[in-house]
Image (cartoon, rainbow, N blue to C red; front, side, top):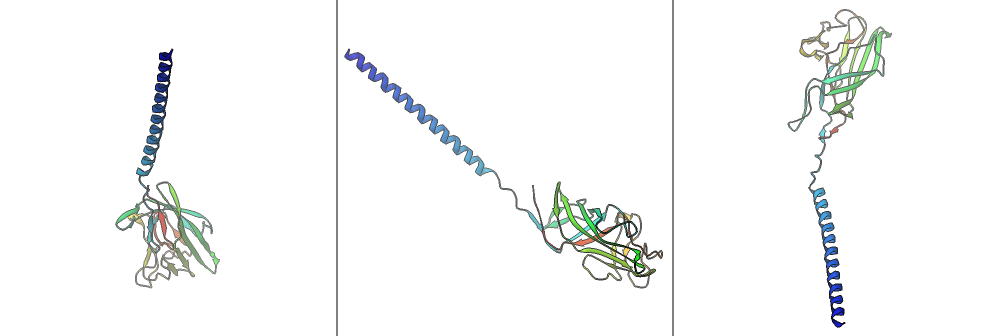
Length: 219
């Protein structure tokens, strides 16, 4: 009888010991798993900081469509593409061909502005790697005053007398838009032919300057 009691106590002790080892192993495994998960999260690399394109940066674009004071209206949208890349600290941020879009802020035909015409454009967005960014730029402005007289205001503001404001990329259609060097000569396009409306053909290069900096995310 005494031997049976002893055997039972020994069996109970063994069972308790086994249960304790099992619980300890489970706890240890759970702790180890949690530690590995936490370590994995810590090792994930942080996303690179955005690249800032400073205010004052020039955006040279090629017009993807034609615009005319005869057919365009204030508020119309237009599409363009970067004709030259934009770099920051030697790194290309906006490659050539980056899509841009803008708004016609003024379009008055020759018959609506005391015999002259006025056209103003501004860019308001660019699309980089499928992500659209809002931007604010200076305006490209051009006006005619009476027959054969034409003035142009470029990205930096002020009349562009004696300077070519826009030139066609790669020898495309039309001619330079703006005043020709050496005043007195008629400008190419509308003013040269005696027409008082303003036409900007597709493929024309225009220059805009960022008024505010823009941050571009790097993926």
